[in-house]
Image 1 (cartoon, one colour):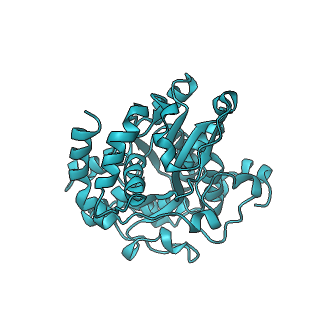
Image 2: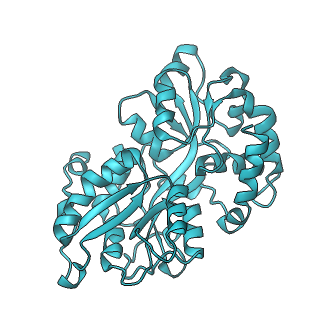
Image 3: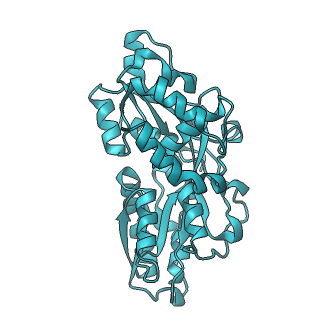
Length: 344
């Protein structure tokens, strides 16, 4: 684990340990998770070895976190999904709604921040929400890199800024950070709404939820600055496009990528086995390399060349962790307000 060459050569087949015969009871395992490049990595790096080791077919159902939570709610009483991979906010809701089963035998060295009450879910990667910018365009224009959430208000970015909407965690984090910087909190986000409406909106090209569309707006040169997470920015930068991630001086917000086995009658133990495969150190390094996910295991040794964007060490320690117990009670109200006042 000491060299990038080793990470690139990781064979996930070596980590999908053969289960006991009792595990191979279900012929198809349905895993719901993010689309885009994340889906490709799971399909290429995890699923084939897991299928071979466990004698099971894995069907991947792509969608964003709110899509997956909506599917779980629609299928209540007749769940089709076996494993859900979602952001931490929707995961707290899934647990509260009774969708997640208990995970047994989790690694002892998981960071406390990645654990959920009663082990009903587990973090599989730590993401920071901050700013992404086009390094080439900034250099060409002689602009200094952004350093603050207040840069979202700078008129030089008029119609060149992209922020995901509030039903996306990145958009929600934007609202919370601007509220916190101006005397507010999760309990009172009025200041955040006021600043977005008055000062940020003139710069917004689009409130864009789609990762694919986000990258298109940058590739076309229409957008030069965005709110996004280390995972998405790392994946985009890995294509060779000139973007970089900034941890704003006021702080970046924590986004925990999480997974849980779905509880249902005759639930397959393979669901828990799949979640625990995502915690294997070698998979953790693949997720770090491909997405800038900070590993959730203390034992994972991070090669210096892989730690440029990821929230690890001191950067991870400084992250702001939102209070989802408050947020989830208010989220529907905030979404309606956002649609009424911001994206009219």
